[in-house]
Length: 243
Ligand code: NDP
Image (cartoon, rainbow, N blue to C red; front, side, top):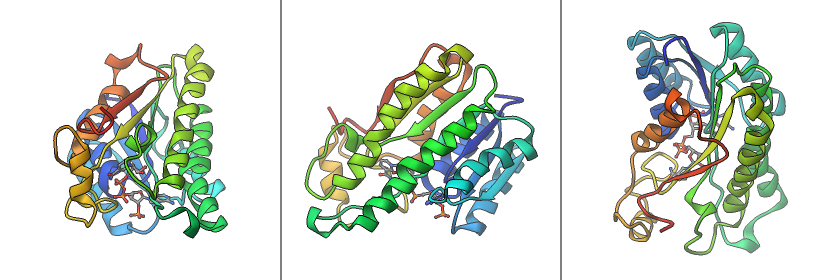
């Protein structure tokens, strides 16, 4: 990926940080977005730079329409081009159906759906031929093993439709769009030591949580040159959660 530029949204921690570092190890210059974790984002950029690549931390709230799209423009301004967008930002908002408010619906749609769409739309205007859009969905689009997931599963399922439609929209420019569905992955959002961890591990075939690096490996493949004929497709990295 030498000479390529990637933007990873939500790259200060978790799957996004692991992906940003993996793409940098593969040779790309990488911009990341974050909202709260300025120090964590700067640490990721320092690690990218230690790998000999250019890094850029952008404070850009995906819930804000201008900021979601603006991160793309700022990446191109500073790093000069855009080859890969990893739409990783997502928030979990789980709870029994009667407790979910209209504000909860708006919040999850703003971050998990509208922000992803607007970032992809902005990226499409800049992506070079051979560009890549990789979106992070969820194993809960494939299987919802218990109650409490209505809003989250709804929001993530929208991204499958977006991915397929983007593949059709951008195929004539040799730009691919794919979606990766992680299973339970050990991050701040879903710690492997959390109260619901054992139940999630039990639903997988492998009986364990995955690591952020295991998701990053799939993203790196889809972002790379070898995946040029792979588009509009869904990839589970879920330990067999949906099997
Ligand atoms: P984390 O909560 O560990 O990290 C989230 C990252 O996104 C942080 O860098 C955070 O930055 C950033 N972020 C959060 N909200 C916003 C926002 N509004 N605008 C910009 N950046 C934001 O999440 P994970 O790494 O666990 O999850 C990454 C993706 O994977 C999400 O889409 C999630 O839904 C999905 N996923 C995760 C699974 C899991 O088990 N962990 C399973 C299936 C899917 P800041 O430091 O500023 O908060």
